[in-house]
Length: 481
Image (tube, rainbow, N blue to C red; front, side, top):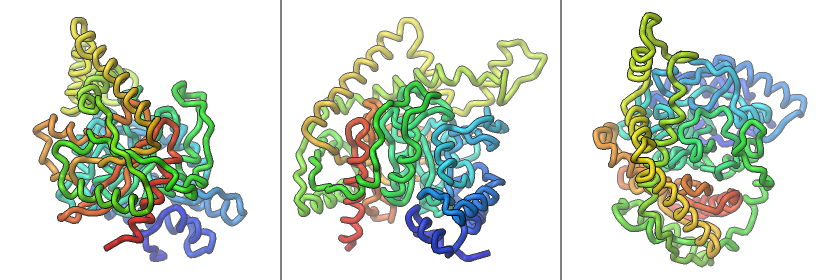
C-alpha cells in the first residue's frame, strides 16, 4: 500500500495530488480507512464498506476528465445525517441497528460532486450534548489530549479531521455543535445560516435551530463544501430561495473593506485568560493591518442561553416522540401492553441527557407552564434576533470567542448539566437568531490545547465569514512566533 502523509491534506492539495497521479482516490481512501481502524479517539461509529469501490469510480471519472473540485475527496458524515445503506444510529441505543433507507440532500449533492463517504462519525445522542460523552458508543476523545473531550455534539467529525482520519467532515449545529468541537479540536467549522443548507435527511433535534454544516482544516475547505451543499431543496420547506454566491471569489475579496465589531457582552464573565489573550492578539494584528474594529453591544446576550434551553427541549420533546419502537428501532416484547411498551422502549432506548431534555421540554409545553416558559422564550428570541439586526447595520462581522475555555477533562462536567450547558454560552445566539457563524483555530493554551475564534455575520453572509476567516488564517501563518 502506498504510504501517504495524511497530516496536511486538505481539499486543494488532494485535488493537486489526484491530478498529478501522486496517488489515486482509491489509495487515499484506503489510507484513511486503515488509520480509522487504528484510531484511539472513538471518532467513528461505523465505516462504509463500499468506500474503496466508490473511490475507484471517482478515479475513473478523473481519468476521463469528468471532475469537480471535490471528485475523489473522502468525507466523514456525522451519524445523525442519513446515507442510504449505511448505519444511522444517532449514537443512540434506540437506533443501534437502524440502516438509512435514503440519503440526506446535503450528502447526495456532495456524492454527485464525486466525494467518497468514509463512514459515520460519533456524536452525542441525537446531537444532545456539549462534550460527546452522551453517546451510546462511548465518548470521543480529543486528538490533542485523550484525557479531554472533543466537544459536542459533532465531536466525532471534529476529531476525525483533527486526527487526520478524514480531510473534511459534516456535522450539525443546533446551539454550537459544529463550532464548539471545532474550537476544542483546532479545526475550522461553519454553522451556515438557517435555511442555507437543506435539513432533509438530518434527524431533527430542534427543527427551528438545526443546521447541517462542514468542518475542515482550512476556510477554503468549507467554501468548497458549502458551494456544493447549499441551495433550495423541494424536500425541505425551510430551505431558503436565496441566490448562492461564488464562494471562491469571497476567498480573494478585500477583507479590509469589512467593518468589524467586538460585542462587549461576549468578553465579560469567566473567559479563560489564554482565550481572551489570543483573541486580543488577533484583534491587534487586524488593527495593524488597517482594520477599524468597533466595540458594539448585544443587550440581550445574557438571556440567550436561558432562552435556548427552553426552546430547544420543547422541540426535542415533540421531535423525539416518533421514536416509540413501533415502526423501527428498539422494540419491546409482543406480549406487553401499549403503556408497558412505551415505558420499556423509551426508558431503555434513550440515555440520561436525552431523557432529561424530553422531560424538560414536555414540562415546558404543558398546560399552565407554556405561557410562563415557552412563550416567554419565544419573545426573548425575537429580542435577541433584533439585537443582531441592529448591530449588523453598523458592522459586517462580529469577532468573539468560540468557547469560554479550551477542552475540559473527560468526566469533569457530566455530573453538573448546568456547567456543561455553559460551554455553549457564545454559540447559541447564532442559532436563535438564524445567522451564520464560523470557528477557526488561532493558537494554543499552556496545555497545548487549541483555542477557537468565532466570526458571526448576518443571514446568508457566509461569503463575508470566508473573506475574513481566510485573511486571518494567512495573517496568523505569517505571524507565528
